[in-house]
Image (tube, rainbow, N blue to C red; front, side):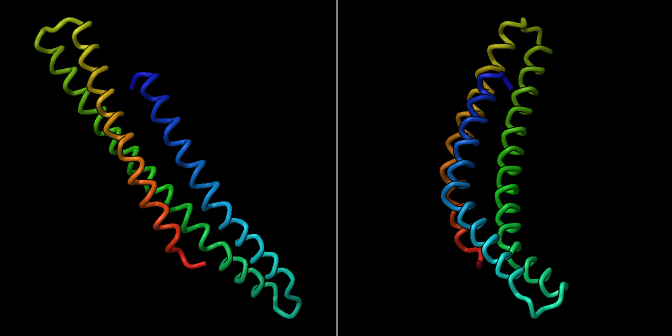
Amino acid sequence: MAEAQQARVQKAVEDMVQSLERDHIRKMQGRMFRCSADCCERTAGSMSLVHQCIDQCHAPMAKAQGLVTNELEQFQDRLTRCTMHCNDKAKDLFDTGAKEPAVRALMEKCVGSCVDDHLHLLPSMTRRIKDSLASIPQ
C-alpha cells in the first residue's frame, strides 16, 4: 500500500482507538484497579482467594481488549484482501503488456479506493465496539 494511503488508515484507526480508550477503556481500567485494590485490602481471605478476586476484576478488561483486538484484526484482514485484489489486477494488467506507469496508476487508484471504502467503515465499527464494550458486565 502506498505510504500516504497507509498513513491515512493508520491515523484514522489511531484516532478511533484513542477515542475508545479515552471514553470507555480508561473507565474500565479504573474500575479494574479499584476492584483489585479492594481484593488486596481483604485480610481474611487466603492468597488464593485474593488472586481469584483480582482475576475476576481483570476479566472485563481482558474481554474488552480482546474485543477491540478482534475488530481491528478483521478490519486489517479486509483491507489486506482488498489491496491483494489490487495487486492481482495490476499483475494481470502488466501481463497483458501494459507499461509500468499504467500499472502503477491502476494500483494507486485501486488502493486509494480500498482505503476510502475502509475508512467509511470506521464509524460503524466504532459504534459496534462501543455497544459491545457497554454490554460487558462490570
